[in-house]
Length: 242
Image (cartoon, rainbow, N blue to C red; front, side, top):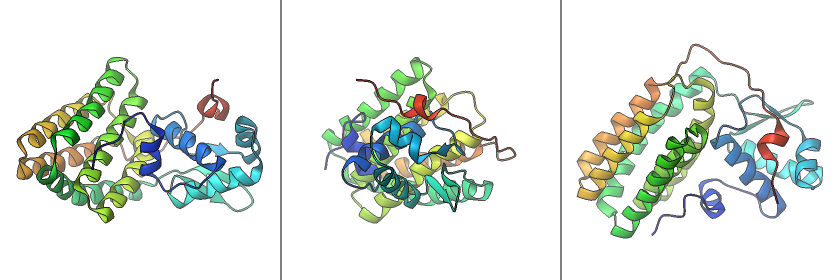
């Protein structure tokens, strides 16, 4: 098994459960906007506006939004429409507690199974993250960070764990958008480099320990006292060029 191109839509398709056809394109764009923090939690996803942006019917938009709701990225409220999900403080704790239980074991498994080709694929994710950090593009850096964690799960080649990690990563993006209190993600990048060293050594115990410390550190980086409302322009966040 090889890791996918961190920029490819196929990689995003693998990370999330998505519908077929034109609804797929909408899902991918909304998910990317969420991971890059272009769409804030709480923003209304008007069927008419999304349909106008993509030139599709409300039926197609509705299929995309239903799929996103199934992934806990969108909340559909009766008689009000669809909104970007707003994770509660309890959910934030529970998501990162789950990650701290699951991802260290996944890192151990990945270290034991790692091939040179897969190691190179992980490095590509880190390089993309580094470029984004250098450009001070924190949203894009977090996007590649999520891709890095998902790629580790894919290398571990455990289908149930991989599915769980994919879901937790997507939910983490919204939690970080709401509650992140640090000014950047540099410390996260350092943890990723330390984890890469463990993978290079094929040191399973080291990889497990670093990943556990990393997830706990991410959890501690959340300010769970405040919950700001989101306010984003759909056309700016989802509008496509070309």
